[in-house]
Length: 187
Image (cartoon, rainbow, N blue to C red):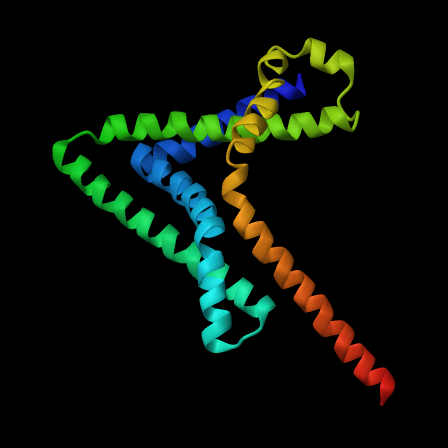
């Protein structure tokens, strides 16, 4: 029962947010974050390298600053295109379709998030088997996290360069701390 109630809450709130923003703003909000994450993982190693070599900030600070600059810049650019596209749609009088489609897209995104929460609750045995059997929606929600995980695993190669740079920054940060600790001990 509560599983279905949670489903309705997530579905309704997601639809409300998407409807109030419209499909274009919703699409570009979601798309800007996804694109920003992916492109930041791909492009930030170059920016990190540039910052580290020109400003000599150290690997850790260059890593953080490079990723943040890359991420914010990409989100800004994608959302700017989204705003321009919304203006075009309003002039063509397609705003109602924009809002309905936005509601549907955001509701689907919220359902993916909700199914992830249910997956976690099921794995930790917080949800009992009788609760899942009584639920009308659980059988439809259960496979969604695995499908989402499969989609994300196909994006794994894009994260490789970022992972290498982040590991390098963490290792250099640890080495700097060890050197400082040894200097304090020797004094």
